[in-house]
Length: 280
Image (cartoon, rainbow, N blue to C red):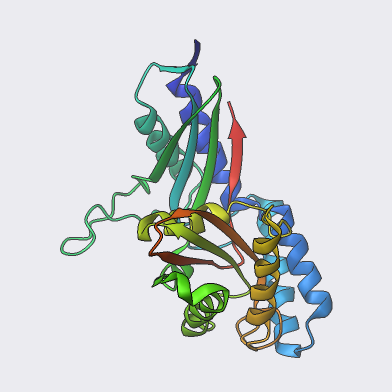
């Protein structure tokens, strides 16, 4: 049995929150540069130039590259032979979020109750934490700060098996077209297929932690990722002001579902597709 101190978790989560806010992932940066090379719209080119310059300044000066530094989603993979000592695991993670957002001068955007009072918690906690028990004695932490301009435009569709691949495409595109330019494109799209309504949404969140230039290992889903990317980039939405660079990547994650179901969830992320992963 290996031991890991809760304070170590807190310090790492704090650092990951700051790094996610300051440094655009390299795969996203490269996708933006590639989009700039192929974008034909002058307005789209101008927007992409500004986005790329903004990311470069943020990295050089250790500043957030978007004012919405998100609600922090955290995925934990906890080895069954790991013992957390010196504190509670979820509290350690939330302490790390609070520390990172306070020390990093990141905007605190979380309210403690969603409908009636909406009082800001003033440290961006609590995070949305998903915990999975896995073999081994390590702790894998993935931090995904999620901005809500794009989060507000996601959706879920409860299809039936007869809808098939074309039904999935239609469902995804309905959500994308309804969102239009509001999620601050160019976007990264996470699609979850299968499970239950809530599980499909979780799959779509996990999909956003993958590199934008990766593919699902199952060829049929990899093909669907490419087809959806092409369809989205044919909409003309472009990088906010029109063009062909509407989306930088579509990632699909899937899981088993009921014989009567075909849940499809779409999480839209703006170009500020933040994620950091560490294994302790």
